Image 1 (spheres, rainbow, N blue to C red):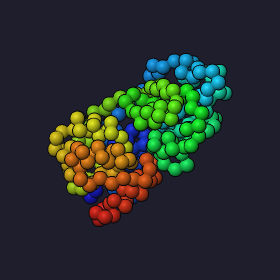
Image 2: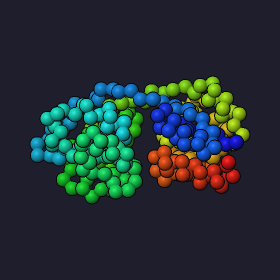
Image 3: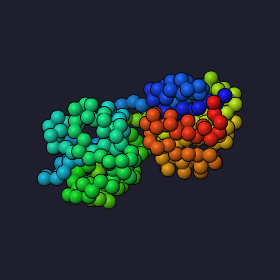
Length: 250
């Protein structure tokens, strides 16, 4: 009997858990943070102010779109170019009726967006809609291309404590696999889980969505860490089944 520890935010975790359950796997849904809105510390009128400049609004996730759009002054919308990190972010922008001017043809990372040739031509004022503590690669990359960059931190993570039943499920699992989509979730698990539960996770197969998370988990002591093709639940499920097949998961 294989248990799959899913640490995404609750809605995404539950969607994946339902798919796992239908395939005979046993999900442990343990979101380690939720989200709340916050007022951006940057004034968006002043952030897009250089006369005759390109004005760029960069959205780093679907949550950045949901929390960030309301902060854009109406009189600025017509002047903005919209950039999206990843296809899911772009799809949410378009669902709200906004065009996506800049998005990598493939990939879902900051590095993928930064490779777009249009970003290197005629840089101007860019605002990155994000949460605190991330997207340094994106901000620094835009600065290197000549953009004046401001971070509009429009939402923040709210940590959650693992519940007793979740900890017990980890401890009692005959076989365990864990799914990690952020370094923040890894650090919260390391800090808040009992030592024996954390050690069991490190000694079990893990699936991650980026090289950065893979490296971080390996630095913490994990030895069986594989990367999924993308962060979407469909791709994660395929990767779980592929990884599980090598270990005779039923």
